[in-house]
Image 1 (tube, helix red, strand yellow):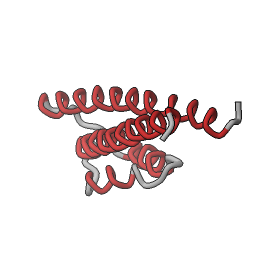
Image 2 (cartoon, helix red, strand yellow):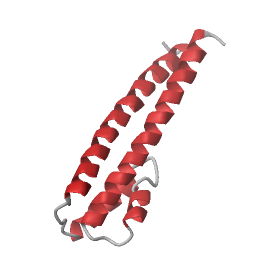
Image 3 (spheres, one colour):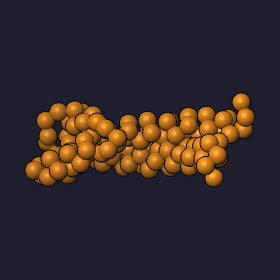
Length: 113
């Protein structure tokens, strides 16, 4: 294995870890929001928001939730929401830290530079 392949494997693993963490935290954020809005099956809405890579599940949730007024979050829910929000931001950074070297080394490895 040459250096490009090692870098691509490591950055690919970081990329996947960031993507999984981001999806999990987004699921939790949507579930808390759906619960606060009194929507039926908040965990299902959380799962549907992650349905595909195009974001149509999340857009569908965002459009559908407008019909429901949001109650004020309890102190525990507010704490959980802010914690998952920070974790989502961190996982997005991890995702990007893995994506950039993966793309750059992929370009050099394929000789497209």
